[in-house]
Structure formats: structure tokens, C-alpha cells
Amino acid sequence: MARVVVLGGGIAGHTAALHLKRMLKRSDEVVVVTPNSKWNWIPSNIWVGVGRMKTEQVTFKLGPIYKRMGIDYRQALATTIHPEGDASGTSPYVEITYTDPAKDGEIGTVEYDFLINATGPKLNFGATTGLGPDGFTRSVCTAGHAVQAAEALKSSIEKMKRGEHQVIVVGVGHGTCTCEGAAFEYAFNVEHEVRAAGVRDMADIVYLTNEYELGDFGVGGLTFTQQGFQTTSKLWTESLFRERGIRAITGAHVEKVEEGVVFYEQVDGTRGSLEFDFAMLLPPFRGVDLKAYDAAGADISEELFAANGFMKVDADYTAKPFDEWRAEDWPSTYQVPRYPNIFAVGIAFAPPHQISEPRKSPGGTVIAPSPPRTGMPSGIMGKLAATNIAQMIKSGSTASMHTASMADMGAACVASAGSGLRQGSAASMTMYPVVPDPAKYPGTGRSLDDTFGEIGLAGHWIKLLLHYMFIYKAKARPGWWLIPE
Amino acid sequence: MDTTDESIASAPLPTSKTLRARKSLIAQLVRFMAINLKMLKIIRKEHR
Image (cartoon, rainbow over all chains, first blue to last red; front, side):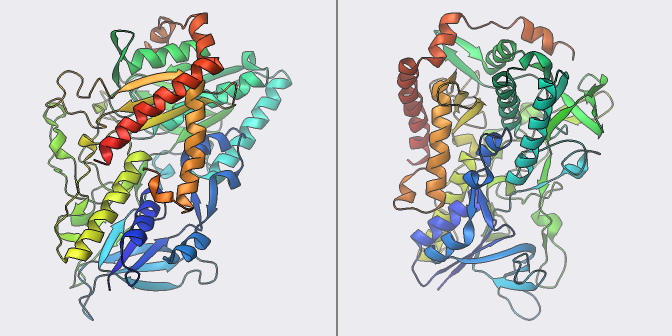
């Protein structure tokens, strides 16, 4: 009998847990440790954030699903990993603190044969003074945050209806943020709602981003073929901004936020401030507060985790300049080198470097979008870890067989630009691979056959279809495993 | 860095025909199928 412990119940962790339970024998145990009681289809938080969906439509309770699937569910926060056990035994284990109301604050341990770290991000609002729901801006990172954003937006629209002009700022709240695609979606959904409310002329909407240019999306932008020409996501995105009348400030690091004012520095050293009535700025991410100790009790966290708190895996973490980055730098099995029975997937693994070219202002401020690794790549990594662990348990070997490097992985993204079955719109994009590989694809680093972008109502239908399909899959309904990640 | 708004101002605007096509139910139904096929192609690469 083997026990696999999955830390985290988000897209990567939940996908891994469901597949493990399907792939392993009944006698093998799958344990999920997550501080949350609910699963959240985060891509649809955008629609919660503009009041088009309710929390119940994007979340569901994990407990009943895990009970039905025979997965041991611990509503708890993992705090320390002991990969070699400790003085009292050699079995590796994780220390946890329960968040389950019935055991709140109790400390426990869970032994494991294999461990998957899919803890996702810590929303690091503290990196920027005044950022976040406890400060002066809104967020859509959780369903709860999105509900607050929707209420604030509604209040802003009411003011516009009463004749008050409003400045709306949407974007990212730090120079090292990721998920620019989500900020882009929210900006256009807000514009769509303001227009639908008949008060578009009363709103000045500004997109504030760390991307050096529009259309970067943290992946260095896309080049694709359109009507016989190669075009770029920059031109394509700028066209959409012009069409919808949204202004943009690019290459920006938000220094601080005060009530109604955001202060920023741009790549060229320019400093500026922007007064706002409503602002939704995404926070930067860092790894959750996990520590690791060896058998002797020595702290080995620095060996297992990068400075940003994400877990180091089979990547090449040698610091090198942008023009020396290679596709081979990226991990392929997501195993921790010293402990091959530990995997880190989804946002929890430490990328070797950015995908977009990192930049610094003359004053030394780093303005560098972090690599996006949510959604499709997260699900693929979760399934990969499950597949390899199942094979390792069956074969008794610790050698992984399957690989899924982001430099050999595609992604399909649908960025909503407004909701509605007849009036909705979205930018549909595919890219292959996510991490450009100029050696394989000279010129753009990506396959021009498999990289494309298109705007239209069809994209909205696809995003809606994905919403229902992935919630069905996550609920482990009949045939769930036939739905690809 | 004040060039982004200038760049937006000179970006190509879609024609009225393009805007109509983006909302046309028939055209978008065709695009829905075409985009899904493109996405399926990417997904198939992951499941080789």
C-alpha cells in the first residue's frame, strides 16, 4: 500500500488527486491537504467581479466530492515538510495545522510515500503598500474578492448614472506580477458593463500593467499569421484598446496606493500617479509559507525553495542573461532533485526565469512579468505528476517516464472581453510552445501553425463552455477523466 | 513610456464588416467550430 499526499486543492492539486485515485489500487491512499473548503474555477471569477455570476456558480464544496471518490481530505494548512522523517523515524511526513472549523488550530502530521506540492500562490498584497482589499484596491483572485469588486463597481456605475465622472484603473499592482491576461479580461469586462449600463461616456478606463508593451501577457507576446501576414499580439491588442476606448500605461511598477491614488514608476524611470474612483489591481504571487527540515532537524528550506518561496524542481536555475535562456532550462518532470518522491506543480514550482524579457528602471526597479502557469499548464502538470507517481508505485522505481516541459507544451487561452450569449466577446488564443524555443522554431520561437489569436462572440461561447466543462470535470461526474486538461 | 497611448491611437480599427462578423451568429458558429479544432490540436499534442 502506498500513500500519496497532495498539498493544495486548486487546478493542479485537484486534477492530480482525482487522476491518482483513478490510476492507483483501492488499497493505495490519496490524501489531499488544503486549507480551503471549496474548489474555485478561478477563470470565471472575472464574471463574478462584474456581477454576471454568483459565487455559487464558480465554487463547490470539496468534502462531498472527496468522500465520494474515496480521497482522504484534510482541511488544513501544510506548514513543514520532513522529507527524511526525523529523530523518531525515517518515514517522510508533513506537518499540518487544521483550518477545518471542527479542529481549528489543531496540529497534526501526515506521512507520505509520495508528495505533490500544488499549494499555488500566496497573494502577496503586502509587497505594495495600500494594495488589496485590506487597502484601497480590489482583486478578483478569489471568489470572495470578486464579490467585493462587483459591489464596488456597481456603486461606481450608480455614481455615473447620477452624473459623476469616474476613473477606473485595472491592471497589476507590482512590477513582478503575473496573470496579465486576467487583468486584461477584467478591464474589458468592466468596459462592457459600463457600456451596457449606458454610461460609457462617464468613465475613463485605464489599464495599468507591468508588460513592456500591450499583448505581452507575460509570455513575451505572440506572433501569428492573419490573412497572409504575420502579425503580433501587440498590434492586435492595441487595436482592441482603440476600438473600446481604453487607455493604457505599460512597463509600470506600482510603488504604493493611497486612498484614491496609485503611484507608479515606469521602465524609463518616469514616475507618475493616477487618481481613481475604482481600482482592481492584481497582487504579485510568492510561494506559500512552507518550511523543510532534514532528518537531523536542520532547516533545508533554502535548498528546496527559491527566494520567492516557490519549490525548486528539475530546472536549470543558473542565473543567466536573457539572450542565453534556453528551452532546456525549464523542468520536465517537476521532481525535486534531492527527493524524487516530491513533485511541485502548477504555480507552486519555481520557474527558472521569466518568459518575457525582464527589465529594470534606471533606478534599479525590476519590472518583469512573471511566467503564467495557471489553467491548462497547471492541469497538465497535475496529471503528469499523478501519472508518473502511479507508474513509480506500480514499478517500484523512482525514475519518471513522462515529461511535460512548458517549452514543449501548448496552451489555449480565452480572454473574455465582455459577457452575454449574443453580445459577449472574447479573445481566443493558442500558443505552442508556451516557452519560446528559437532553436526549434527560428524567428518567433513558436510554431506559426499552432499559434493564433481571434476576437469574437465565438470566444465567449468557448469560455462559457470551458466553465461548465471544467466544473463538471472537477466534480468528478461520470466520464470526467475523458475531458482533457 | 508615454508612447503606449500614441501607439493605441494609431492601431488599425476594425471595419464595420469585421465588427458585424464578430457578432454574426452564423459566422461565429463557424468560428466556434474552427477555434475548437485549433484548440483540440494543441490538446492532442499534450496527450501524445
